[in-house]
Image (cartoon, rainbow, N blue to C red; front, side):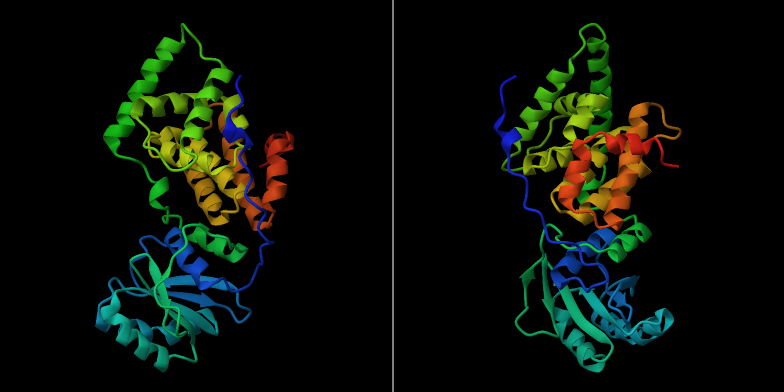
Length: 338
């Protein structure tokens, strides 16, 4: 088989070690919040313990008009006392019309609020720190600590748009096309190498940008990923084209076929240092697994999703995770898991 240039794509550099129990940068916090609480469209209070550990997230109000911002501030002392915490961040999703009210809150609550963050139109401003106005929210998360992952588990509805189902007519069409392909394949089986060639072509196609996946192509890709050897081969792919491919596929996957793709997203994200993305994708995989499991492949998919979540808690480095995937030991360990 001809070597594909994408197979030689550079692995992203190893990020620095995770720092548990430390305050994340504001940019990381506002990037993470939509994953943790959905929808992120109200004032939130992000509360920290006296050691600086992320403790809880409270949605303050149902909307964020000028009067509500002031009302939200009135709840700060109550919530801090209830959680026995010393300080918090107030993050308000609101336009410029509410900035004066927020600045008033900053002055009145300066002893209890570490920062007051305004988020609007993909940008954030720290109203307690001049010179931070209108900074762009990052699209990926470099920082993750165990306490933030714990919060992700508490708020599982915060899936980003990329992990939510596509339109129902598309999902129905893909399911029908897969059935037709399977009937044809019963007389002319497709080999593992042919499946991998198809996936590598789609991966290479997305080396620069995402490309909409046609239903017929999505059906072929999902059939390929249903083969255990193909799925395991894909686990070690970690380039940007792979990330885009799996995100394009999951939007076309019927619910019963989401788990294999979500686990691939989790594995790729972990290898690329996108730890919160990996956590959310692994959670999505586990929630969409069939019950009871029907095949050995189901056991492996669910087991790897569980392993990824445990390793994120343990702050395993991306390099160590890549090494684990390239060995056979992780599959053996799954058989020992309760």
